[in-house]
Image (cartoon, rainbow, N blue to C red; front, side):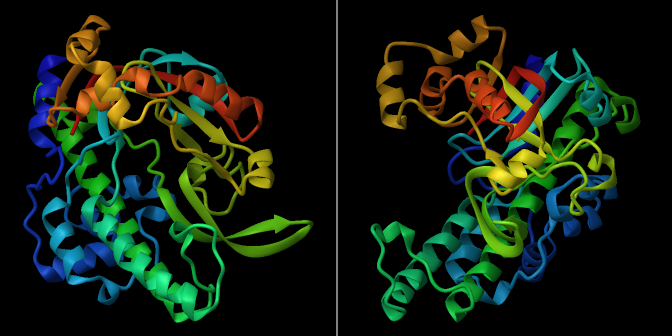
Length: 365
C-alpha cells in the first residue's frame, strides 16, 4: 500500500496552486472547455467506456470559451490534471459491506473489492469564472430591480443576456472539471499498472460513474402534476436520477444512477443508487458528502499537539499530503459521521444504499 500511495502521489500533482504535467496551448485549452472529457479521451487518456459512465457523457453542450476572462485562462491552464487541496482527494478503498446484493452485482461491486475514488473539480479556473460572474450578477440585480436578503444570492432572469453568458461560462468550467478527472483517472490506472507490473485488462479497472457537483443544469421535472423545465442548482449536492431515466447509460437503466457520497478519510464512503421518490422530492438530487462539524480553523486548533498522520496509520490507513495544515483541516472528527448522514438519505428514500467503502490509502493536497 505504501508503494501504491507513493506512486499515486508522484503521478498526480496535488496541493494549493499545484501545476500539472500537461502543456496545452491556447487552442487545446479551448477545446477542453468545449468538449470536456471527450477531448481528453480523443488524446488517448481513457476510453469510450469512461464517457458512457460519466454524467452527460463527460461534456455538457453549450460552453463558450469566448466568455472566459484572461485571468481564468491564466489560472486554469497550468492546473489541468491536478488534484488541488482542501477536501479534494484520491483515495484507495475496499468494499466493506454490501447492502443491496442485486444492485451491487449490476454495478460490478463485490465485498473485498479494491476501488479508487477521486474528488476534484474545475480548480482555480472554475473559481475564477464564478468570481467574474458574481460581479456581473451583482450589477444585474440592480439593473432588474431584484431584492435579495444576501448579496451572495446574486442572480438575473433566466432569459437575460447575463444569465445566458453565465450558463455558457459555467458549462466551460464543468467541462474543465470532467477533463481534469479524466486525466487523473488515467494516471491512477497507470500507477496501479506500474506498481503491480500488469496490464489494464488484468487489473479490470473500469469507471463506475463520474458525477458532477456544484453546478446548475436545465432539466425537466414534474411540479404539481405538470412537466416543466427548471434550472436545478446543486450546491453541495449531486445528481441522483432513478431507474429508467432517459439520460442514464444502458448499464444503469435498470438500477438507477450510481450516487457517490464520500465521507472523511478515516471512516467510510458510500455508493447508492437514485430513486423515483428522490426524483419527486428533491429534483433527483442527493447530498455530496458528510458535511463539516468543525470549521477549518477549529480543526487546526483541535489538532494541535497531535500527529494526525500517525493516528491515521494506527487505523491502517496510509496517507500522503502536500499542505502543512491539510491533515488537521481534514481530520475525521472535523466531519459528521458519514454513516449517519447516509442513513438519513436512505430512509428518506432520496437514494438507496448499495455499498460501503473503507479507506486504505489517501492522497490529499
